[in-house]
Length: 195
Image 1 (cartoon, rainbow, N blue to C red):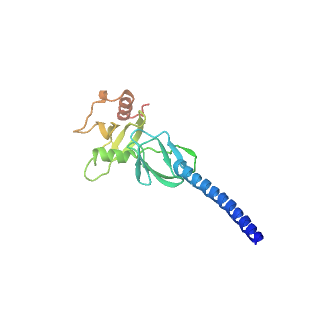
Image 2 (image 1 turned 90 degrees about the vertical axis):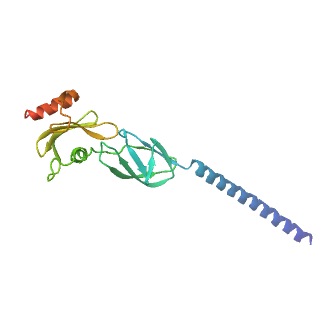
Image 3 (image 1 turned 90 degrees about the horizontal axis):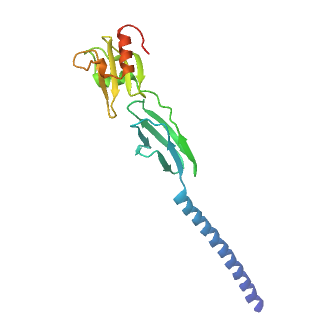
């Protein structure tokens, strides 16, 4: 009988050791899960975004230049008044920092002119020709059709506006424009492309 008690005690000691090891492994797994829960993010840094950019990740507005996200793939949209809308995807890895430089393109000057001045007459859409961008893409100058009128559009920080249009009911004083814009429009009106 003593050997049975000895074998039972030996078995219980082994079970106790295995349970201690199992508890230790579960404890480590819980600690790792907590660390991943608290620190388990990747980081994306947005660089070279124009002023006034609206950044959305999976439809949610983002106001910071640096964002912590869970690992995964996200839908990204960027809209600015001076660039064409951008849509792409971000892949975030665990504990990784992503420097994101979106390749933004300028907005369509015809769309900007149409939104500012509307149709020149009731039958024709607005088309800009000889377009030149100035001052970090906050000014557009060229001619608008129909009518071959000189035009300068300025982004004021919250909207585009007509700063010059050689048409009735619009500002048409070239001296109130920045010198390069004014010189360009003067050049267009005399038939050459001023730089």
